[in-house]
Image (cartoon, rainbow, N blue to C red; front, side):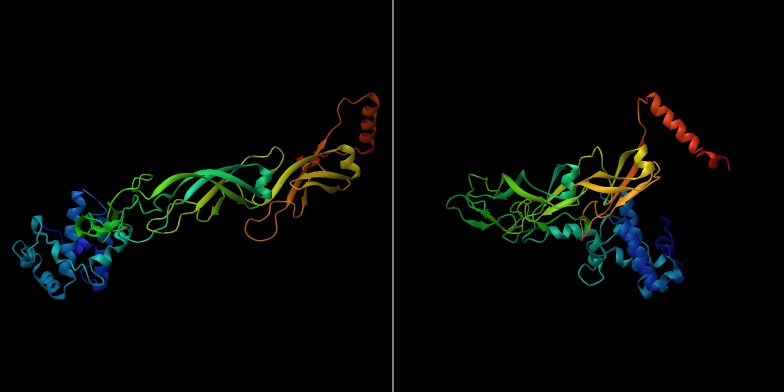
Length: 370
């Protein structure tokens, strides 16, 4: 069977340094490792090929032989393919150095890291909970204290979380021998994980609690006081420490995250920590100026309209916006002016407008033709 050139297999040039060969191998091994590609025969074959190439090119003596004679010294019947433990096709997985620094275990620590965590038979934090709360616009700006009702896993009050019945005792788990760990199925390289029977505790009750049936936990409905800080917006997460599900083996409870959903306001619009609104004024107020009252989230605020104000002009009310969620201060409120014309003009009113037009014969559209 024709074999590919080992340098081509690793994608390096013939004069590549040991460091370049090692880096190329690690990159390809991570990509084609069987644990990353379960039940993928093509990936397994590729992994064998790059491992074979690396074993030859990473050994100075073997590399010199390969550079001089090619595949001939390393064909079928070579001692490396006849060791005890050789797998199908002569591929010997036992030749990997699993223990030392830089060995295969170190190489795939990033791949197996998540599973490796399961082998830690010790206290672990409980799962977090998420709860959505609908808020009015003003409550999101000002903040709110309220109560919510939710269900969460908590220690069983009958057995205090042990899972043992009355008079029952905790004994060593027969499945793991009391260690809390069993060998897992991590593909080619083995490994350990938390015992599924005792959940990593290493112990099982001799009799089960009637309330929780040995689980050590019950689902309880609880009312929890929640304080929504000023300045939250749609999709904010407010953390309530320790109000998630109970932890394992005495570990701390998870946290509760309140997800805020803010209803839109008919008058105000929020952009960041600023608030925007549109306020109508009369022709007289726009022409002569006036002092008007403007709605804000804190109530009414006075604002002065200067003379000769145009429709669409924007004014700012400083520090009348949304409080900053992180840090002191707050945003501003921006007011857009909209001039509203009088309706149902009588004869006298129409004549006054005509007179105004004769006194100020301006054409605001003349700038369009320049």
